[in-house]
Amino acid sequence: MEIVRVAPNVRKVRTNIAVLVFRNIKKVPQLYLLSLLPILYILIFKYVPMYGAVIAFQDYVPHKGFFGSDWVGLKHFNTFFNSYEFWKVIKNTLGLSFYGLLAGFPFPILLALCLNYVGRSSVKKTVQMITYAPHFISMVVMIGIIVQLLDPKTGIVNMIIAQLGFEKVDFFGNPDNFKSLYVWSGIWQNVGFGCIIYLAALAAIDPSLHEAAVMDGANKIQRMWHVDIPGIIPVASILLILNVGNMMDVGFEKVLLMQNPLNVSSSEVIDTYVYKVGLLSTGIKYSYASAIGLFTSIINLILLFSVNKVAKKLGQTSLW
Image (cartoon, rainbow, N blue to C red):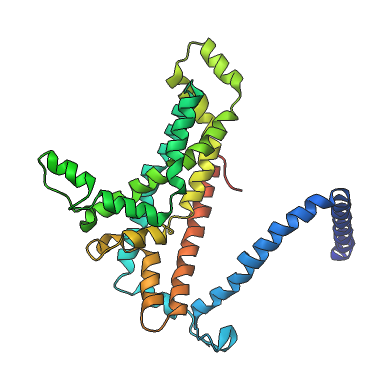
């Protein structure tokens, strides 16, 4: 009897919701029409291709398709977990990600805080242009510039080192240098873009807070610490969560361009491993490459949920 009474109420609520949605659409159809395009894009190009992840559990053969290929379960995952390269690529991937996060995350914040107190707009715009310009340089061009600058024979950096009386350094030939070269070149290229985001967050801080701080005798450092940093923490929290959610994706193109046989022991990451073993080896291993890609996506998802939950418990802004 209780179920019989509840069911009509549920149907009534659903009907009311449908009526409200229809009325809202009727009021502003243009907004819903505009939102339809990104929704269709996400459905067609993001959700529909997810079905292709099924080949990670198959011995996929293109002419047999998804339905004709043999089902093998977790075979390809076990092959990856038991491979000789597994721990090396995991260590290198996480090492690059953590290094990049720890070294690169504070720099856009520091640059934005400094530029926020620059009085002359011409100086501020010039610094912004100089720091933001590398973001537009092609990755191939950027790596080419770095290779030429650090060349052990003709590079200007090694020429300066030789003039100072020291031995020339083969930067790309030493595996220990790879992580630093990768991370700091990335900071140089992207610090300006991150700075713009934090400058926008700083512009949204209530000016009356700064006025009150000045009246209380606070200097610029104190205003940064007590007004600016608390004001941009929500933005920083969101960006940190998103960055941690991409820990397993370190940038395939850049790593591959900087990689050579001498530094491969520290530069071989998951993406380059998949490219070489799954796609360049004899016979393209679609299923093996897909299994590794699915594994990294699951790890990223777990990290994203974990960091988001930690942020909520700490009382910080979270994604949901």
